Length: 582
Image 1 (cartoon, rainbow, N blue to C red):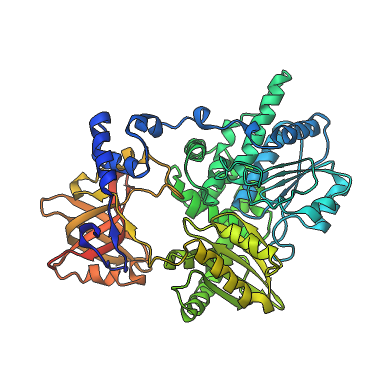
Image 2: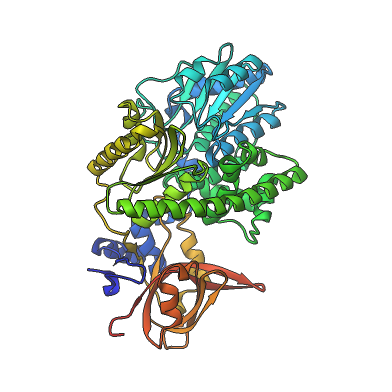
């Protein structure tokens, strides 16, 4: 049965509330812990046992951090890395061009700088070189360096690693591995086929962090001391959220601790980026994914490939400010390019049909730097895996995003093995591919069939999941702060969403470019202010502005609005539906 009877909201979604089991679990937790009912409802939905609630609300990295040596090749990788440090060897870091690659590189560069060593950074150009190591770049680096560390890439790079003659290569990655590994010193990757998958949720920066933890252990065994790793968790947090890694287990602790480090504003690159993004308060997980992450990514998407990694590893505030401003400009340019590609891709996908197991679109000249973002938008709009491909001559380069429960990376890898793709790889939720133009239709048809077997395309637009009901007067700053203790929220741990039932619209007005400012009450004198971004892109904005006295059920997330030194709770409105009887 739909929650509050909402089968078809103003955004076309069905509302789904807590299950009976979750409700019982939450009530038992209230009795045992005396925590607020709304908080217990969220913890119950996240599957937290009542007796573990206190520990969950205070995750400690020392309790959750896995033994780095549980990953294959880890001791060898850390040992070779330390050998290079002791011998003052020439070290190069070959990194992917996204946030995970940039933060991974910055971790190593920062650590080595504190040890008195300067590393060479190499980030391939997305358009000219594509993803991962290539023969020419690796051969060039090998001529001038003793050790090459590949981060967030390299697991499938047999040929390019073989081309690095004369240098040792260590791979620190998390992308799906093949049946064989490249011939190098070490491949540390929780998604190697011979791993048990217990740490498959780690991003590459977390793998790099674990390698540095192991390096620190080996140094202490020799009576030496390395840099402060806890101060580097801001980079790991940024990568974990931006790479859409599930916020469970150690990932949750890494992000929570990393946000505290970021709040101290000690890293010049992140300070400059936060300032150009006009972040006026300590960042939350949301800001990592939607404010800072896109700006770091902008260089790799449409500008200078290594700009994000250089900013994150920069120790000069003036240089950091200049790079942050450049990335902010590139991000604005990226949004404009994305908007054009998005409109064309959506029109093409709609013509093809949005109810298939796979939604896809391909266009001549579409910028390869934005196809991943557009694929993400198509995925969100249709609740289906999506692929968007930019064609250039006889081949196309594309990017895909998946939905929960559908392993896109494995399907893409199988397509490559079958010869339908020139190359392809990734992980469960995101993947990249290169395809010959004359194979495009056959490849997408085969991919659709593979994804359908995994259950893709069985549902309609995503249901809107609601944790429970709140009265406007119960939405307090104190409640928001209590709910934040169950965070950080993100992939695999969605943030709390509440319904305000049978609300009277006291005020509703369009603000900015298509946003809605709203105030609602329950008729008992308690008001709740709200904001809905993009409300006028669909029917919700007009329906609430022209409410005519009708009452509505409202659904959204609570956050804190700071204005003039005063804090108030506000509703970040996501959906609405006419209350029954109106």
